[in-house]
Length: 317
Image (cartoon, rainbow, N blue to C red):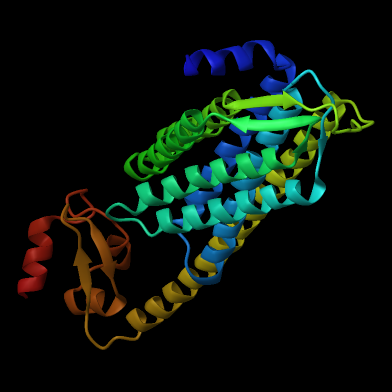
């Protein structure tokens, strides 16, 4: 019976075009969030905090936009309006909850990824129900407790599985699987929760509908959210590029220092790896054992640049 309510709500009370738009925004936001989150795990200090904030903003804005566009797709058969303060509060809740959740998950180890994902799932639910509180209708909203509880459970389960999957898998597989699970968490929670709604008409409540068409509002919200996501991804890419340049500069300086020290050592030095390939040799070593500088440029002991016996006899000398 409860499942029938959810299916009926989705089948008869929603504009499928806007539902598809909401799902598209949701999927893009989920991919963007985990893409940014992937850089969190490899960063430290201020950069880590900044990337966590970007992850929270991206996921929170995407979750909120999915909810709002899906709400615009919902047609209860009566005029509707939205309280701007409560609607804004629902966005803030989404950003804060996802930031906290991803922060816990990024600590890694043990149950932290699962706990972080559950926090994200609960945050999705809080955002949804606070956002529903912003809807003004000429009637009284009544909730089915069992479906409300089910929506939280579904959202927490899928979101927790998303973060666990991301930490246990590697590469693009982790990204796409986690993003898909987070998308399921957002969409399934929303539509389960919508099935829990019953509006009892009250003619004494007057509501003036928005002058803007729902499709126009949905496109505006989706477009603005996609711009936020694009900005977040661009910022992450710039930060990553700057970090890479700093690391390359640091490595270059270390190499110069190492080569200078090697060239001015009083002792001869050479090092081979486990495959007997020459890794390091200085000029003093060549002088001590009478090896030509050209031979020292060879990177493999067995390549013919010199004979192993030749080197052994030279060392023995």
